[in-house]
Image 1 (cartoon, rainbow, N blue to C red):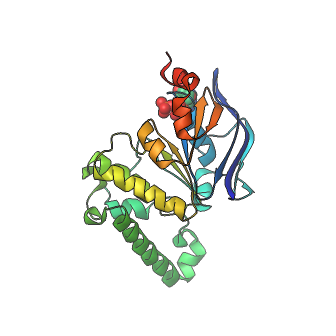
Image 2: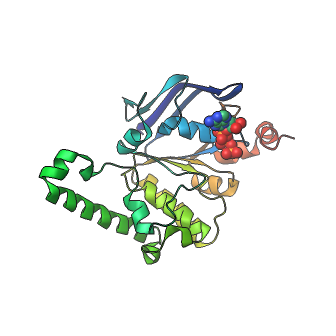
Image 3: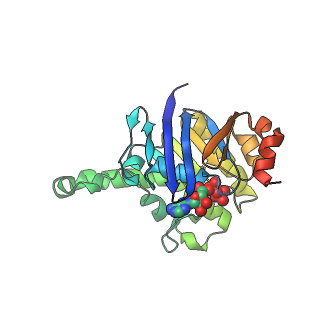
Length: 252
Ligand SMILES: Nc1ncnc2c1ncn2[C@@H]1O[C@H](COP(=O)(O)OP(=O)(O)OP(=O)(O)O)[C@@H](O)[C@H]1O
């Protein structure tokens, strides 16, 4: 199984708070890795470091062997590093379809030269993107609301839009930040199915989630984080059953 994301010696502190303390972690093609740990363990910070929202103090992140050091978030997104956000970050007044169309990815029209001299190519690429967005909306059960403003959807549907948007850039690696928080019913099952299909197609997936049942059912493996460190890696069922980790999780 090939490594998609390789994290080596990652360090980050905010003043006195250590959010990454020498993290070594590999995300593998076709596998779903669950990231668990108590509030403040550094899980979202790790996603921020991988996706380029935050710069590390030391250490490196590689995507398909290519160092990402110094690259901005949109540059990483173009290379296939995709993520969702705890606080959604949708454009509420834009339609669901348009929220997908503006996803961070490579745009044919971003080159002024191409826009000026090959407008037909740009139009064709945008039509292709629209087709792709509609396909993704179909796959995520959102086709019926494609033209509705995203802000008018249920919370579960908005979470699905966040996941759907993350699929627009042909992700090599997908980071899902608490995809299940506040989600129930059909959206819950749909997110599980979409993530399974993605992994089956070779994407490396990493999920931060407090919903332990979701993590246990979905993930091939789990990592337990505490105080910016990876304390354990193994079967999710074993991590959950470990009394030492449970104590750290619940702080009892
Ligand atoms: N930009 C920042 N500036 C200062 N402190 C920060 C910053 N980002 C995160 N922190 C702090 O780092 C610690 C780790 O936060 P992080 O969000 O990564 O934890 P988490 O494991 O994702 O927690 P949760 O499960 O609650 O989302 C917290 O104490 C948080 O307040």
